[in-house]
Amino acid sequence: MVYKKPETTKKVIEALKKAGVKKLYISINIPLKKNKEEIIKNNEVIKIVKPISWNCNAKYKKRKKYVDAYTSYNEAIKWFFKNEKEGIILEDDTLPNKSFFIFCTKLLKKYRHNKKISQICGSSFLNQRITNKTNYFFSNYNLCWGYATWRRSIKDYDEQMKEWPIIKKKNIFLNIINDEKFLSYWTDIFDIQYKKKFRAWDYRWLYSNWVKKKISIVPKKHLVQNIGFVKEATHTKIKYKDWFNDLKTEEIESNKKHPEFIKPEINYDKWLSNKVFKVNKFYIKNNIKNNKIYKSLKPFHNILKSIYKNFT
Image (cartoon, rainbow, N blue to C red; front, side):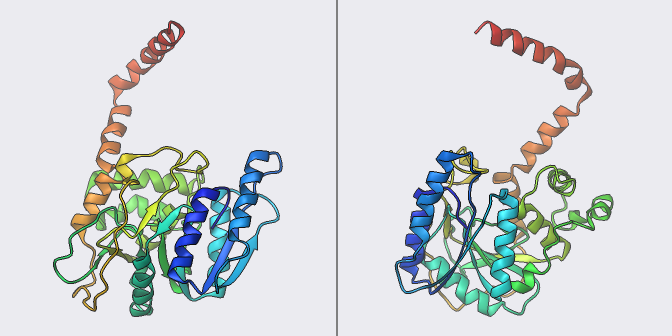
């Protein structure tokens, strides 16, 4: 999926070429007519992806008019899986290393008919020493900085989040991680999605998989780096060190060993919740905001802030 980031798009295309990808679907969003600077960048992107410079069957979906990020992503996914039963999904700022493709190819085949597995992640946010001969494990989280999945999984994508009011009322997601902070964080996220205050495909995808009690495959080494923390980005304009965006990828050894049991690594999920999603920090901040004393003092804080601003 490409839009208006020629510098990162070029790197991703080079990675695809290096991996010798034989079949490629390229979804192209276009800017609004009034955004002249974005149109120039968009044209640069189109020159990079069209035509593909190696032996590859490339198909294109270029929009006739601008659509928002959610619609662009959603339509691209539908188009891809209408034509393919399984495959890899990359955006114009998710840079894979070579072993990512081998890793996905092997595991797409191995777990093709296992409906408990929702996807194969390329990002792990860590580079772990492999000591037990398996180069991956399972998680409740499905991370979307480069991943692979099947049409059978996409069919379970619940865009309308139909069951959310009941799930919320019964606190069903405590079955994933039995922690009040975890529940509070994701309840807020899914509330926003359900009320359509902000639409994000990856959050609704995560919700859809949790509803179906699915888990994901996570590599023990980081295979895809997000290089999209730039001013042209839709959601990642600022670099967040806590998001491990500077973590470099490492090639992963191919082996025939697989985990004995298909169950999520809860310690990893807790680590991810706290280190990447900042669940604990969010919980404390939320409690402070809802505190009666804080609420009573907030107007005075705003007045002092305004006075300070006028004198500086």
